[in-house]
Image (cartoon, rainbow, N blue to C red; front, side, top):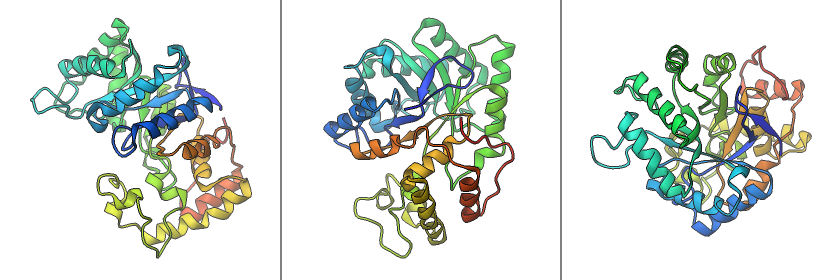
Length: 327
C-alpha cells in the first residue's frame, strides 16, 4: 500500500480508502462489513470514510466497533455532517448548533474520542459561511476533530471558504471530496486546479462509477441479479438503472488495455484516478472482502502516457496538459 499526504497537510492516508455508503449498516450484514474492514486494514488501508446519515447512524456504529480493536493512531477516520438526522428544524444543515451536536453524536456512535477528518457533506446556502467555518474551527480547537473538509461544494463556494479562513485566521480546510471517475470528469475544469492551488487533499468518491467501470454491466444484456443498478435505493447516479448502452460499449473496449497492464478493469479505473498527484485517496465501496483485495491492488500502479492516451481516445475525452502522471 502506498500513502499520500492529505494535500499540504502532514497527515498521510492510504491511496485506497474504504467507504461505507450504501453498504455497512444497510445492504451489507455486520459480519460481512467486519470482514471487509479487517481485510482492508490487514492490506494496509489506514483510511476509512463514513457519515452520520449512512443507514441513519448505523454505519458509524459498525465502522467504529470494528476499528476500535486497532490502535487509534494506526488509522484515519472520516465522517460527515449536513443531511437530516431528525425531523426538527435544527436537525440538518451546517449551523453551529447542528455541527457541534452532530459531532458529539458521531463520536458517541463511533465510540471514539476524536474524529480525524470531519466533512461538510454538502454546502448549506441557508447558513452564513462564516458561521459554518467558525464551528469547524471551534471543534479543531477543542480537539474533537483534527482536520475538516467539504464534499460536493462548487469551485466558487470552496474558493470563498478558503479566502474566509485566511482572513479570519481560522483552521484551514484540509480536503475536498468530489465525485470523479473516467466517465465523470467535471472536476477537472475548476475543482482540481483550485485544490492544487490551495493545497487541499482530494478524496474522490465513486471512482468506479457505481460499478459501471468494473465491466460487470454488459451492453445489450439484462442487469445482473443483485446488482446496484437494479436497486432504486442505490442507483442514484446510474439513471435509475437505465444504462447508456454506448457508454457500456466503451467500457468493454477498456478491457484489453487493463489486461495489457496486468490489471483488472476496476484496478485500471482506480489507477487512472490516482494518476493525479493532487488526489490523496480514492474511496471504494465493498460488500465482499475479495473486492477489497482486488481494489487495493491498484495502489502504486502507474499508467504510462500511452495507456492514458488510449483510454482518452476510447472515451472521447481530451487529456489536460496539466495532468500529472504518477506520484
